[in-house]
Length: 534
Image (tube, rainbow, N blue to C red):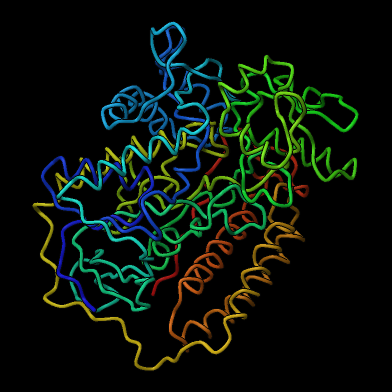
């Protein structure tokens, strides 16, 4: 079960993975693109809001930079912020060239720009309220039509292959990956001179999340096990407004609803955001999520309400057709009544440490998108900078890989195949399901929007016990998709907990009642974790 050696393996088929693959193919390289499910199932496809870019007449990259730095609460890397903001307009044009049809203004003079929390200008390019879906459909059509891109769907990467792990000698570098073919149940060896991790974030670590089931931190976990550092894992962004309904799994109510005038209300109809921040509903996400969490706990509420019914119904339906249709399925007419909402885990701001070209600590390994830590987001991601980061760093990584590829050493003649000679079929899959549920519950309870040292210590103890059980299961039974994801989630949960325990302040998305003060920005530091030596 060993494939022929290849030059480039891209793991993950969201915006980051597909943009990297398309740009490498355009430069004349052959690429294998691996997707856990299919090309249309990723966090990118679920994005509603859009992509931030300073293209308005009253806007500039400098203003975009300043808004990003402000939202990042003193931890953004200015070089990364400048890199992304200045390249944003070009990336919008590239996406349009690929067939992404964004919403235009009513005057026919250009793209319609909406505004979201933390932005000082209207600068969010969007396709109604289904921006991610429109972008992914355009790119997936391009990928399918490109003869230089081989698509492997229904494959989940298990671990990276490195020179150190197989005793190849010389410089330690990435040599490929093992991946589980979800259809056959067999693990396949993929020798590759370059591997790109574009596997998305890890918000399925939490009980309530806006993310699809694929967001299990696979790339972060694999890179850590391969010896790469991770940074700022404690900064998990909770989106303030997910639809609250027992049958509405993971449905996000876009921040653009608040950007267009949506008001957050208590049961008595009173607005409360101005009690927490002078920017009201347009405050950054961390502030809005904590405010909602505070009001729910103070009032014993199951949810709060988001109301945009004061706008003309025709505008609501024009701007938010997908959200309005989804709400109507649950008997909620957002043109006439408020929407019940709650916060949910939404975005992993930390990840695998990379440079401005997506290169990790391990030669031959790159990371783009939510699985990476570029320094762009700091302690809190500015709305609609996530898809932008994928597009910018996908292009940067592709350019660097194309430059580096001719000088890369050849792969070893043969890589070791996956060994299943000493394992059996699992006897009780219920163990995996129970551990998954326990992990997500205690992460929500102990490592959520508001934290304490006692809660974090409890979480650390629980996750270590779980990891012992998972390791025993992993070592004795043939792996399954669920076991691979659970193993990765437990590791990422540990990294989040350790990062949170090491930060002795409250900053951005990390709020600890035992350390409620924020250190001066001059003392602000990234939380960098280094894996133990093998």
